[in-house]
Image (cartoon, rainbow, N blue to C red; front, side):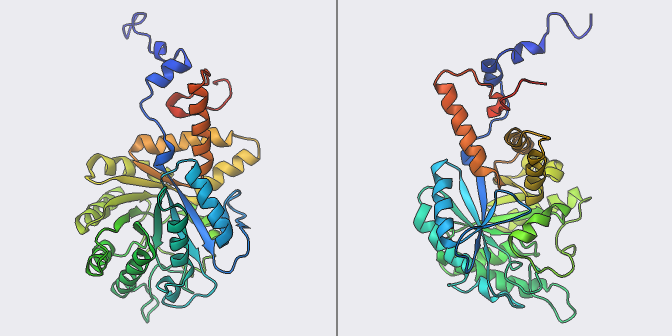
Length: 351
């Protein structure tokens, strides 16, 4: 016999649910999940997003209810996106104290500020009529440095509204340094910055475009990363850390687990990942067709992201999966033998 068999039998550590749970290398906890949320100006009730079944654009009333539900299941935070009624070339609504995103930040702080980290998306794409993440030059290109001036004002507006973590998602060169300086000068040195450091131009963003009512003309390939470039992503991460990012993030998660793992190996700050709209939509659609178990597949995907090195994960599954994890934890404490290897279970016999 080879491989020291029959003395060495790895299956011994897989024999029972309790043993599998005890030796699990990767665990998922509700506090590591962040829920992205969309708040639509002028909405009188929640509006379903057709390409993301189960996800909605919220009115302020439905937003309050959803915030309290999120807090009740113990997730870590909420990441807020505004959907304004009116857009213009420079995204004026992004810096208006009464703009929908800044209003939503204040509502979130009032409702759940002691229970959840209130995060705000800092990007112009939701607010511009051309749909780009920055202001445009006369030739139609995105003007990096002019955009940084808008980002500075956005950072201050969001901090004044109460955002604890401002999330820089526009992929402009120097955006972290610009926002950090603006926050410090305005007396908001305690406001943290998350850098969408390695954000790739992805085909999986499609459902998100519906969620924010995007009016994008063209594409974002001049500022988001090319999918083939791993080293370039690491360079962006390094630069954002040098500029003062408190957290760095890789987006999307699924197609860039190698970049996530390499980032986690070297980063001195927390590393997050975003399980994006297309990833959510694929799992949900397959489950609706009866091809996979939705929650089991979602948990497996999230554990894969965690195993690759993410300290926290933005995911549209956050509340549902947190509730499931809490239920499974309750079953364990009540003496159930439910199989929760790595805190994941399908409720079905293993294949």
